[in-house]
Length: 355
Image (cartoon, rainbow, N blue to C red; front, side):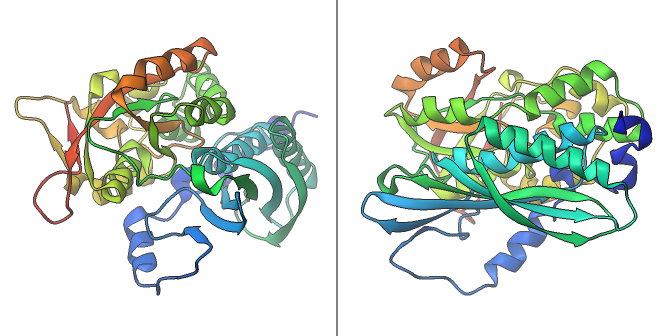
């Protein structure tokens, strides 16, 4: 049965994928008000807005844990499940960990066709199986809007945890996937997308970050990693800059784009999450003197990504070798800039400079 003929999932939600998440400014306001957690085995908490938490369970061994779920951003249920699983796994890969188990998170309308949910869960299970991650259970609730994802637990060496707070001046910045999933899937929801745009976006969103993570963690010069998801390139770049106390310089013309992303911008497919990301991050972003960034490209830098690539901060001496290794296995990585110097919040310097 072709469930896409029965229902278009994107027509039953207000916002899709990572664009459905809380605005980063709102989330930061709440998290900053919570008391700090202090425990000798808590290696990474939520204070620096990192991708996952890390908790030591013994000598040379720690758990890396994350949860991610969202509303449909494509119409096909099986594909939606694949994207949700790939996205949830990405946070573990961004820390340099290896996923072990997952718990499904399901929100589903009471009167909806359960065959649709079955296809969503089959798609998710297919990607979890590809990642050698075992789904051990889950939880479901009734909800007017469908939502799906996973809580993922992995294993990691406590001495080799890659956070968003380790970037060093002089590092080179590598991005492993093109951006544009938010505007393209918004165009899909609005009925203004072209099939080729959506196919390219789906191809990117269903590609595991496992190989990219393995190659990055094997490189001695890698100092920091994060994955580019709901806060967009500028939002997650901001978190890396603030967490590391550095300024990132982005060569905007070198940022890889999914073909069709700029066309979606021109068609007016602007997700609400893009506007929220821009409001959150733009105050710490400046354009270099004499520089010019086209308005459509500037907007795309704030586009909320779903299952985006890894942003890697690597020593400049190792950057070309890492890039070559990524390209050799068909990962569409690109050098997009560098880390230029130290940054102190409130000192009047930008966290990100666009060139």
